[in-house]
Length: 219
Length: 219
Image (cartoon, rainbow over all chains, first blue to last red; front, top):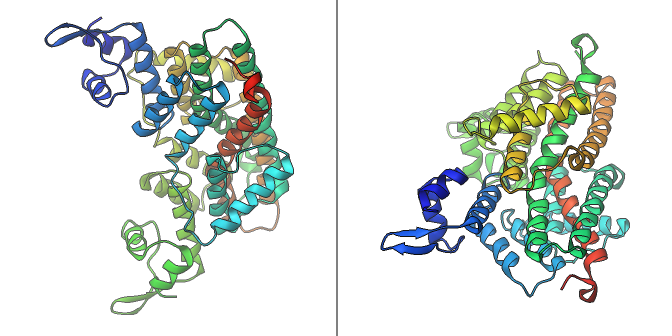
């Protein structure tokens, strides 16, 4: 298909597609004339993945590029690719390591993971991500205790165990590796907004149930 | 305290504090001279909340302003303030209502909530947020079935029920309303990165357990 049809099928403007091509986020089409090229279903699929990572995942193009590089590295195992996706996600978080409260926040995270018995690389960026959130809560005099974090850790662990079971099952099936990797990246990045949206919806439901109608609400 | 001390205590640069003051995100200090003003603990607390919402919550200043306006509106009940916080959060999501796939994605969300029995306003922005994520997954040929969404809905509901129990308990205690509202906003916004970070950490733990060492991994 021509670039105009690729644009119609994906809903991505031609100018944005050209930008992604220049940035190397998609491979070029097969040239058919001096100014025309032909694109196939693989281009369409890649374009949709890039768009979803940017728009729904909220990632920078640099992070998308890092994830795609990992996805295409056939020397990596699935565990390594997941790790690369996590590292790429963390690029958008930024560091707070020069903050005076940082060492205590990181120590809290490390102690929590020890207590949970989770085996996580000491340099895993999600440790920093959690430390940043805890540091902000501490500054607001809203530091959670270990017990207060437990329900979140428990929910996260239930989901992760479920997700990795699915992924391990796919990996042992006849599915092509590229499909399994695709599934892993989508699951890591694109289920984050799903989970957050469902939490907000559940909060509204529970809030209505417990704090409403107004005559039962706090005055 | 003077603005320089406010900056030291909060870790927020003086120029940023002045910007927040100009934008009306903080009330002015008490003037002590032509070019000096005095700030108190309430300023410090507000400054930390703004900073946390921007840096950790990833919100725009417009969203922060909308949340703070709701927090300060003493005519609102706790349920309404939570609702306002959700609406303000959604400002940063953007609309996809002109997309041809939108009506089907929104219908999916509405059917899911009916099936879950959650009572959520038909205009709640989190419905749109979930629809957007589902639309992106559908385009990637990765539409989750109702059954595949259930573990996420279940985890979200467990957390929300726990959170609203804590909030309702605070609301019935002697705690000042402003403290309860503070707790509600912090819980809504700042526990999102906590939950996401814990999910990534749990994924890494489960990934290491199931997909590693390399000789057990997919080849």
